[in-house]
Image 1 (cartoon, rainbow, N blue to C red):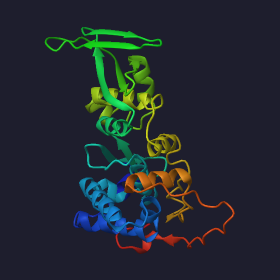
Image 2 (image 1 turned 90 degrees about the horizontal axis):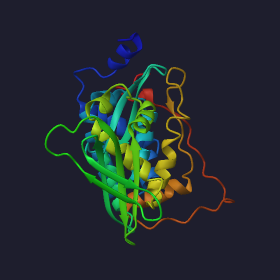
Image 3 (image 1 turned 135 degrees about the vertical axis):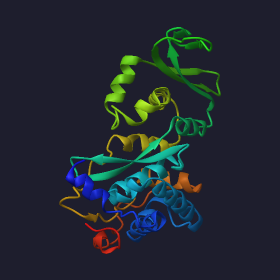
Length: 298
């Protein structure tokens, strides 16, 4: 274990109550206005989100040591996807960044979470995803009338895995499938943060299904908030400060239209009108050093 990693782990002593430490982390984020920026001002929505977040934080002690800016990013993505990090539809995973010398919180939908997002689209009537092995019966045709037939070899050895697929059936009856072979799955796995271990090693078939579902989303109609979330994934952590040089949370920016749409989707309220580009900008509060809170030493 590196010296930096050992020091990070010492930031949350064993005698600290995880719920108390998690509550302080949420207090930090809330004081900077991030929850209201993401979720709006409805008290019930904010409290529900805080309860879910507290549960996620206390389920993994390493999340309590994560860079707060990455936790804010994870909360932002949860709101945009409108998925709760409950370990079923989505998770918040702590990753150690040797480059930045800190744990980072990363929001990840599960395969089931992607299915839930797809079913929110009124035009989608059916969703399916599975893996294909060499002893299965598998037929796939493209064209103006795509066709996919899969008969798994349920009993006996299925052989080596060949790939994975996902498909939706639209209300028009049109079937839209996507098929990824093992090479394509390996290419996507190589870009993952835990490519050599973690979920890819423990649940390879589940990750293959999830990868196929994720690829399908760019080809079918999905909710506006999910579109914004897909676009945001490519820019994860792009503008995060280096904790070794900067130990403060940046002041929240004025919400962008995509974020406003995500907030409305999460809260179940009508989408707000876009702000007037010519109105005077709201004053930005001064930056605040989060190390003043107990348990958040820089």
